[in-house]
Image (cartoon, rainbow, N blue to C red):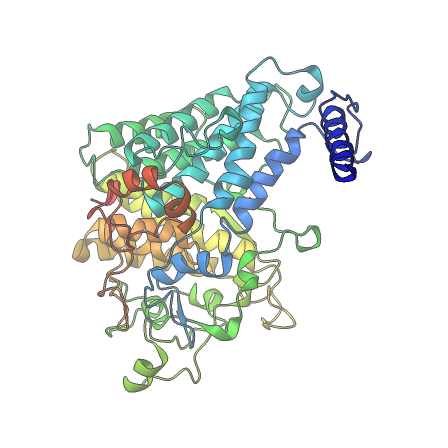
Length: 521
């Protein structure tokens, strides 16, 4: 009897608990909130964050991820830890592209495209906030698809709409969207409207943003030249349209796009994360800059190029590079040594070193290639000359900040200006066109001009085949310079059905670093 009574009490207690727990309670909007927290979007911060995240590392696991394209382009050689330069086929990472960059920009585009409030318009006019966001989203998406191939875009970052497993758009469609975004974003911009207050690239100069959009359009159109080689085809048509646009392209150093590196504001150069003792400047690059007549010279150049004095930490033309692509045992067996070899100059790898996004020199080299292909009637020699001379100039302007004697510790940004040597070197390279052909010389000069800009240089090499780089002697992937990075392991595990469809866009249809993306097929 006593036991039955206790059971009734317990049951009643449980029922009371259930009843209480089911009551609707309105705790108010301020319940358990940080009174200092931000609970509405700060759109200028979203824009600044997207630009900063892209410029700083462009992907988590940055130590491996940032360096792989630089190593694939053979600007540096690894000393002891050689997995990346021997082409270990490890998954990549694209989380930051989406979570910290494209998500931010999509949020801005959505908010400013749907009756924006007067409050958010104080952070920038709708046309300028949307225009800049579209242009920068296109830049990010180009890098992402060039690196992996097919990828989420049209359904990306739509978790709040219930799309947790986005489909993979094919690379052709992605490139069409990139080109569309660049054009529509450019055409929206207005210098007479409120500038985006989160613009930490051009700080509200809409005319420079338009020139950047057109310059990226030239680059994007050329990236499709294997698919659309004709002078009247899609790529050439888009190239000529951008070149003739009234906003112009980047032609002078002051219009170039450079990230505002600021270590004091938690915005350091990401290359400063790499331990310098683990890397050397490659002998392939050094001997090519010297114009040497040996097998390490991977270009047609036979003229000393004083950019070497800025690229190598020796600060002189006597720099010695490390042969590329050996593991430590094979390096010794080949009778090579790290002794006396130079690192990449601290000018490029200190935490305050400048990083470019798009330069005038590179834009002129793109125009030179298009002219050599017959896409335009511009003069190849003139464009090649301007591309080289402007590359010298921008290097001086950003890495030789005083003319006192260079010292890698006490005066890393000092040294002798190289611009006075530019015209003579450019003249010699123009003369090389007669023997070696314009597209080869231009492709080789792009490699030199894009020094340490691994993503763009690697994309150029895969498309053009210049310079004539050879696979790493100690390669572990069958001896193929990687054509892409493998998809992130998270996609294999959590978005598998869409991942498998994305793999079908590769040639061969295998998720390997030897498979080719669509524009490379």
